[in-house]
Amino acid sequence: MPELPEVETTVRALREPLVGRVITAVHTYWPGHIAKIDPAEFQTRIKGQEITAVNRRGKYLLFPLSHDTMIIHLRMSGHLAVVEPALPLHKHDRTIFQLADGQELRFRDQRKFGKVYLVQDPASVLGKLGPEPLTSAFTADLLHTCLQNRHRALKPLLLDQTLIAGIGNIYADEALFNAKLHPMRLANTLTDTETQTLHTSIQKVLKLGIQREGASIDLYTKPDGTRGDMQNAVAVFRRTGEPCYDCGALIERIKVGGRSTHYCPRCQPLKNR
Image (cartoon, rainbow, N blue to C red; front, side):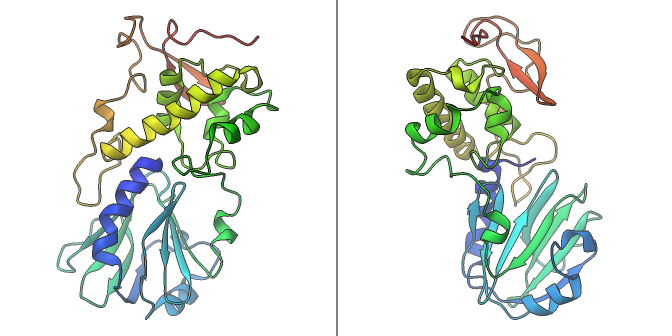
């Protein structure tokens, strides 16, 4: 699933071609894309609205419109691109937004898990999300407050979108390696210094992911169809059996909270005291 860096890369690529454009029509070839509203009502209500901005909240794309806000969640295989209408439809193009300048915003979604919302209040969809990890509001003290009373492993906590918005499997593994913390370390056993290190590591790996325009692992590509480069900069994610860049020990894979988790057994020893 695209995580914060992949979604941020998509937002930055779509902002210029979409802001100020008016949606003239919508064609939905997979009604399941449209969430919390009847697809026919969605098509009628969004017609004629201008896209006034393109933003991100966690893993969601936000499109403030003239009267409403459209929210898109790419989920596992979603891909957005602004294209010329003459471009033949791809077999996985599910929802097509026609724009007043003649171009189209196409939502491709091979696995059909993506969602499109049209709401007056974005909080109705996003209200439970935790803080954005790259903002000044996300401090080491806030992270400490979030972790200190939780007798749970770190890895699933980092994936909890109500705790921190935007982190998924890739960047959780990378942040924990960077902080030299075992994925099964109990959150309430971290020292103040370890919490500060984890805070710094979360921001470091997310910024690197944005700089490298996301990780093209599985189905993710940028809106222009090219690949991001973060997969070439990961330290542990999907490097099972390969040597750690820091110590030479072989990277291991375990299941934590039902998710495949990659770590270095020497750099990230388990300490729960």
